[in-house]
Length: 196
Image (cartoon, rainbow, N blue to C red; front, side, top):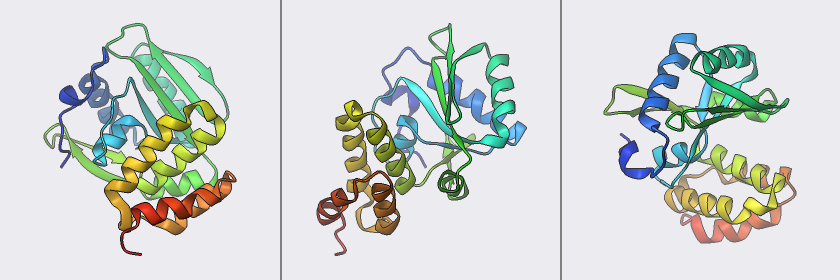
């Protein structure tokens, strides 16, 4: 069970309860394959931090359904690439929602490994990427934008502190190697893998 309430953890004009209840209900109704991957996922995984938007990984086959859903809720897509879609609502209570598109084997594997967690006192389930996969996406974010490094490194270390020895360090090594940061894993493993 998630150990925090949405209202207690996020000081933001976004009404995360409203946004997430609506999106999760519609994802289930429309059978959209997704995984929560951003700040909200961090909270579900036991490493909460503030956030101002909602981030999902979504199967590329469902992008049309996602776009129809978002526009029906009043969101406007303000950016779209092969890899991501970004939506913004004029009403600040609905905030921004970002989608990474899963179509490459690594991202599709992340979707296969998601786990459902109860939220909103068990009234809904949210599918969340595994801690290793959230870390892998943080590594990618650091590689794509070095200015984000401090924030993403903080999140990575929070998840490593929380999951330590239970992490799949081989998968983590693969993510770091993919972005030519493989040398960073050994000192992190020494700090956080207490089973060594």
